[in-house]
Image 1 (tube, rainbow, N blue to C red):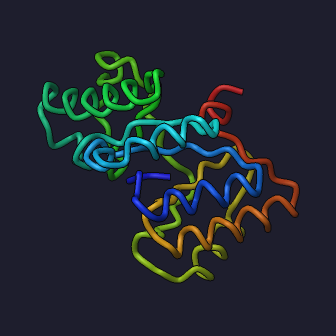
Image 2: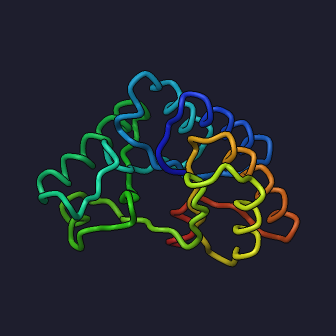
Amino acid sequence: FDDGPHSVYTEEMLNVLEEAEVPATFFLLGQNIEGREELVQKIAEKGHLIGNHTFHHVQITGLSKEDACREIEETSDLIEELTGKGTEYVRPPFGTWNEGLEENLDLIPVMWTIDTRDWTTQNVHAIVEHVVKNAGDNDIILMHDSYESTVQAAEQIIRLLKADGFEFVTVDEVLFD
């Protein structure tokens, strides 16, 4: 889940995930952490993986190396301060990344294989249908924990894919297991 934490829908998403006993990865925006510090701690306490999504949701490739590093480091510092654990993964907004930047940051860039485009539609059925139709082994599904429709879609996607024998894991397990 990208773009969180959201003051309402991240909490709802956490409830859906807990009820379904599903771990997830949350790529947080630094600018959305202020005032939601307890929510960040709750994500970590519930055993979800927390990653970095920059501070201001900027396109990394449009920044100098120094500015790109600052965008990412500020968010990582906030997350570590709140959870006691540093971030190991970064999801660059818009899916664009400067090769070699991870060497300066000691973070692994993570992309996706299924883009739900949930931010463009409030159509729960369309989101669910797209994911269920296209899901396969080791897919990384991109969703945003900023919309009620995404919470509703995630609940259905989890139920349907579990019924088809899928297992949900955090991105580190997809990348390294």
